[in-house]
Structure formats: structure tokens, C-alpha cells
Length: 290
Image (cartoon, rainbow, N blue to C red; front, side):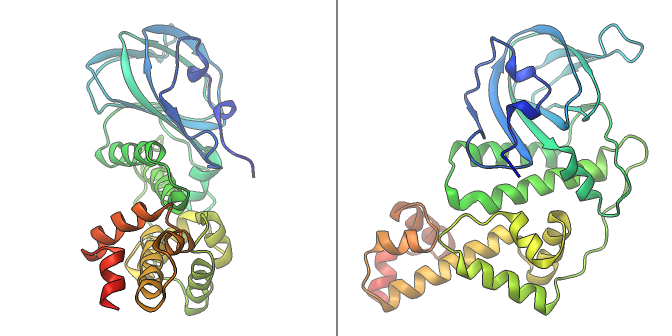
């Protein structure tokens, strides 16, 4: 599966005056695309895309109209924190009434359908509104792009799965569904996944690879992994990396920078930052403690 990118969006970001400050292009994300930019007032029509579009307003208030010139026309004075949801496979006619900083997140439709979990087709609503959880997920994804480190791939995948799940649970056209009850991974599934994580500490570990190993969709895997361990996959992987780094620091003499890379940290400073946050210590202090 190739990288999900600008060609998979509905075209707003291709407007000639849009110059993104940062995007997820080149990070290898296969079902999610993010862009942060400043938008100018405009009125335009866009064809349907195979992705669902989620726009977080970072400023405001600003007036937005959708369905312009159609019986479905809506207008809303959107505050900072407001969210604009445009479903996949639906044409968009929109007018933005003022300059605005935004974060766009585009989610592949197959990720949303997978998050539903039961094979029943999901259709999302055309919405203006707010959703505190989605807002925090979008801001977290933007933070991942801003401070990108290859070891954050599993975390980014987890955030994308959470976005898709929230869209399914609370933003369907028609009646929303509640979450499915979660059961944990079996002993066999968990052992295979944990071994793969341990074998690939130094590499990015896509969530889809771990889910496939367990024979589950990404959303099913994320729920069942947390039910089994009490942690989302990216946090469990980080714990394995910290444990291995601590073992090597206490028992070996290899340079700290080399240990950091071997355990999946971008550099020595990254390892130091994580150890301070997780254990309240530093690599040098661990080495001295033996």
C-alpha cells in the first residue's frame, strides 16, 4: 500500500494561495494525511474524494458556508476549536469568510469502514460542530508531524485508528453506534505481537503490521491489545524500548548514543528525554548505578 497523500484529498490544499507550514508527506502514512496551514477567504467547489476530511479551526470565529447554492446550504459562525467534517464520496461547495489557521486531517474511507468492525457500510455526516476528543487527536497528530521521529510511527497509527473510531461512533449520518465490547488478545496472539515488537525495537513498527500478525483489523487489534495489557500498542512498545535500553546501560559498555539507536530512539538526547519522563533518571545515571 502506497503513501496516502495530497492526491487522495478533495483539492482544497491544492488552491494556489495555500502554502502548508507542515504536512505528513514523506512519512509513509498509508491511510492518513495531515496538513497545517493558513487559509485565505475563498469560495469554490470540489469533487468527491475517497477520504473523509476533518478540518480543525485554530482561530476564529469565522463564518463558513457549505452546500453553497444548493438546498442543503448551511452557514455557521465557527469558533476556535470548531470542526468541519466532509464525508468521502460527496461533492463539496464551500465558502470561507475570513483568514484562518487550520489543521486538515484526511482519513481513508477504508480505515473508517474497518473501524466499524462488523462489515456494515458506514456513512458519515456533513457536519459543523465540536468534538473535544477529535480536537485533541488532531492536535496530537499535528504534534507528531511537527516533531517527527521514525520511532513514532506506531503512535501515529494509533492516533489515526482512534480518529477513525471516533468518527464511526459519534459522526455517522443517522443514528450513532456505541463502542463494541473489547476482549483481550489470546496468549498466542499476544506472544507473536510482543516478539515482533522486541525484534524490531530499532525500527518503525506500523500498527497495521502488528494487527496483521494477530489476524485482526487495526481497530480491533488496538482495542484487544489495550484490553490485554492496559496500554495502547505505542505505549507498550515504548516500555519495551526503555526496558531494553536500561538493561544495556546497566550491563554493558557500548556508547550511550549507540544504545539509543539500537533501542529505537532517534538519538541520545531522545533516549535521555524519555528516561527522565518514564523513570526520573538519565542514561548516565543508570550506567553508574550498574
